[in-house]
Image (cartoon, rainbow, N blue to C red; front, side, top):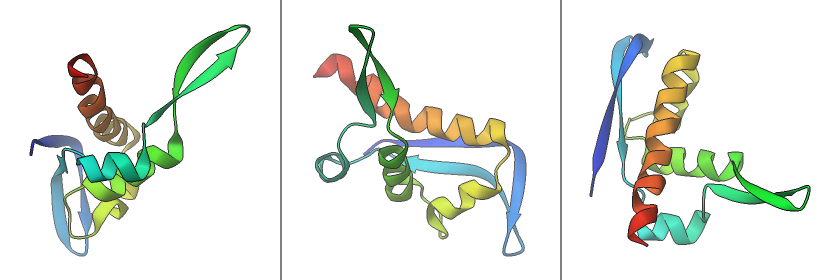
Length: 100
């Protein structure tokens, strides 16, 4: 199972310990069957585009963040670092798309 380590530009402190990186594990097939796709098709003016499903992304973060406090640690991150973590999570899906 693939893991991704995101080095934080602005480390945070939680319970007296410094956190300088966030590790994400690749979502499993069970996660996918439980949560579905993190993107949903949105119809707009006769066309459609894909938008992130906030609740589904949150479920994947809860499942995939490898930290003793789980995804709660993400609440401490700077906006830029939080966006990096989300981008890396979603890259598991965009990287898998050509293979399916």
